[in-house]
Every structure is written in structure tokens, then in C-alpha cells.
Image (cartoon, rainbow, N blue to C red; front, top):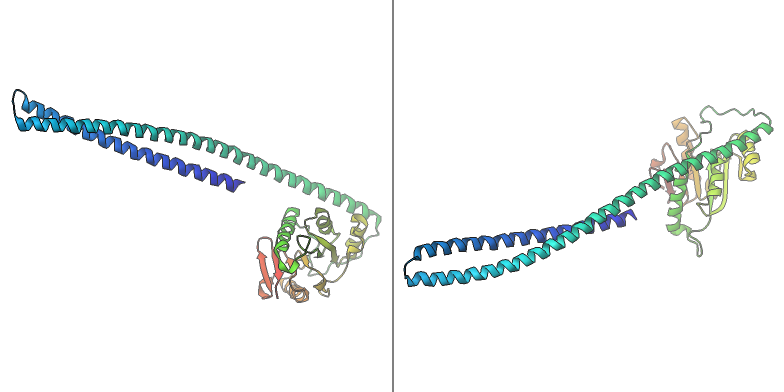
Length: 317
């Protein structure tokens, strides 16, 4: 909508410029005729002064010629005055239209800005509401489960929640890619339903969001984590049951999934790079990978980076 308004504003500006150019041309033409008339009036005055009291036949003939030219220029002046008035009227009308267009444009831009602010606050509110609901459910489930003796591996990150808005942005972008991807064509849907997997899902908060948002056409949705305590909490709190399970990222077979999400589970660069190598080798061809803060995905020729700001890749070979 903003592009359409910009185009309309540009068109009105060009029309105003054209009207201004026409007015300028008519002003110059009018000034030219006036200058000619002024020159003729001086010549006629000089001639009359030289002929006063005399009977110079040649002078009289010249006077008649000057009178004729003067009459023609008077007529030309009247014509140019009408054309100038018409150009001035056209310019005034175009200026009024331009000012009205500017006013409408500013009002709509202000409305769009207000809508964007409102959408941002709404997004933040929904984010907080979703996080609050998940936190409450997880806290209640955690209280009913026995304490965990799980020890986090030295090279691993503890669970770090990924920003909801950026996560949804990535899903929306992948949904757009899938709808245009010939490898995922479906005769009746935007694309064939896909299998989604999150590596290091913890309690499954992102999986719940993936399912409830309905951004993607899902065949199935799954996630795994090395921490069995977090998996148990997610199963009890979020109703994910067997959709989340305990597994080791280095030993997992990723070939059964179309979309993978991995938010930098390993803190040590060398170990993270080894994990990415294992993951890329196991992925099926044409699968998508969302991998924020990856270590070495650029080194794999079989991966094509589709969106660097959202860290979206596709295995094309």
C-alpha cells in the first residue's frame, strides 16, 4: 500500500512540474510580446516626433507599417495573455491537487506508523503472555517431578530461549520458500506438509509455538534434547508426549525431517563445527535448516544460504 501511495505522490509531483514548466514557458512568451510592443511604441514615438509638421512620404509609409505591426503585436499580446491565464489556472489546480495528495500521504503515513507501533506492542504483549503461560505450566509440572541428576556436558550451552518474534519470522520466511519450492509441490495445498525437528528443544516451548501458530503446513513436529529432566517436564507440562524425546545430537539421524531448527547447542567452536558436519551429512537433500549462530555452514557446498539475517539454509545437493 505504501508503494502505491509513493507512486501516486510521484505522479502528482510530475504533473505539477509539467504545469509549472508550461506556466514558465507562457510567462516567457508573454514577456517577449510585451518587449516587442514596447520597442514598437518607442519607434512610433520617435517617428512621430521626426514627422511632426512635415510631409515626408517615406516617413508616413513607415508610420503606417509600424501601426500595422503594433496592431499585430497587440493581438498577439491578447492571445498570449489568454494562454498565460490558462496555464496559470492549470498550475493552480495542479498545485491544489498536489497539496491535497501530500496531505493524504502524510495522514496515511502517520496511520501506518501508528499501526506499526501498535503491532509492535501487540507482538510484545503476546510474547509475554505466551512465555508466561509456558513458564507457569512448566513450573507446576516441575514441582511434581523428582529432582534431576542430569549433568550438562562441559562443551554444551544450557537452554537459552530463542526470541519468539525472530523464530516466527524464520518460520514465515520458510513457509514462503516452501510455497515456491518445486521439491515440495502438492496438488491441493501450498506445499506438501513437512516434518519439523528442533535439536536441543528443552521443554519444547518452540515446538508448541510451531504447532499452535500454524505458520507451517505440518505433517509432524518433533524435538529432542540430551537433558531427560527437561524432556519429562515438557511432556508433562505442554502435552507434547512422544513428540519430544531424549537423544544425542551427534548420533541422531536427521534424514527423516524436512525442516531442522538448531540454536547453537555447543559453546566450543571446534565441537560445534563437528556437530554441523555430522548434521549436514545426515540431512536429506532439499531439507531446510534454520541455524542461528552456526559456526561453519558456509564451508559446505551442498548448502545454499537463502537468508543470512535469519540464518536459513537449504541442502541442495
